Amino acid sequence: MKSAFQKDEVFLADVRRTLNSGGCKLWWLGQSGFLIVQNDRAIVLDPYLSDSLTRKYERTDKPHVRMTERVVEPEALGALGVLDLITSSHNHTDHLDAETLIPLFASNPLAKFVVPGANRSFALEQLGTSVKPEVIDLEAGTSIRAGEFEITGVASAHPAVERDARGRCLFLGYVIRWGKLSLYHSGDTILHPDLVPSLKPFAPGLALLPINGDRPERRVAGNLDGRQAARLAQEISARCAIPCHYDLFEFNTASPDEFIAECRRLGQDFRILRNGEGFDL
Image (cartoon, rainbow, N blue to C red; front, side):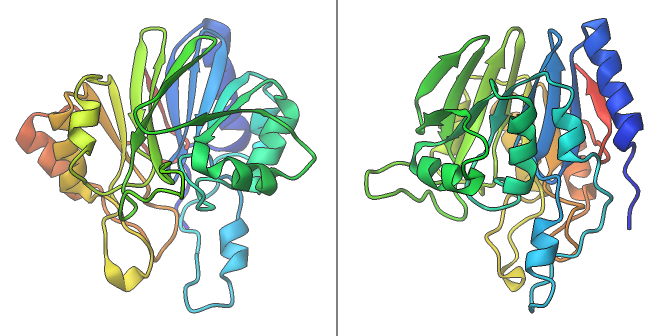
């Protein structure tokens, strides 16, 4: 198993230093999960900090064998008590994990929960009755302001842009503006015709993009590959691209080498992080 760059108390000490110094920093939590600290507060994007999927598929023909150490227990991360916003881009467990979310909301009862409007009922069912966060449900093309945050929904295709009976997207990415910080977190997506036109007006400072690709033999919905992620970042004028959605499960991963090579060819700024590693913003 791969070692995390830093984990548990060492990771938490790094977060505390940033909080105490008033810094602005992002950490990769693994898969599509990110922690961002700014102004002594924090947000968490699509966290998966349990082994619920490994247990669920242990005795099946599609085992989810973990390949990198967990960065931090959700109880310990939640105990910092600084979370203002937690997102889920769609209903797959590595983006909506009750074992991760319940401890986070238990310690941060005022944190808002951002989900696609089509998934609101499902998300709340997963949380059960032990926590009751304020839910912000979004649709593609709509923006909501919540305190210091402006959040806009962007349709994702996983593998298609799917909608419910009311026409609401089941898979979203989010553009988040928080003070001077702007970022796009795609959730799970492949390229689709509306993606670049929806994002170009934002020119986000950060683009957080999956690179594990779309391989039918895995029997799961795929994502951008490394070259596509690099090109998407350039086309939307992202200042920096950070790849994700790899190095968690053995059956569904990829090397970042293709992403690195394409970013260099395009002149696209990028940063490669290890699980638990931070990036000063």
